[in-house]
Image (cartoon, rainbow, N blue to C red; front, side, top):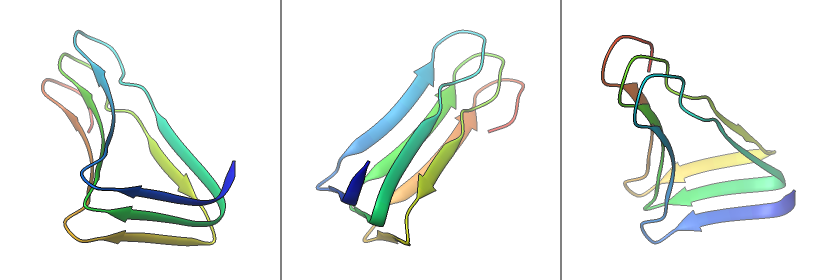
Length: 79
């Protein structure tokens, strides 16, 4: 765990399952702040199954400047 986490400059945090099954989770923890600036976070399943969970825990969370968070599946399941 860190005090502050800065994810920037087209960074990409992702988990992908290529076949059937649930995608992995992404969990970020900072005691003070998490900032996403021009970056992406995603979980996806390319077969049947659910996308993973994305969990961010901090006192302050900022998502700015064309950043995105996405969870998806390309078959049956929930994104």
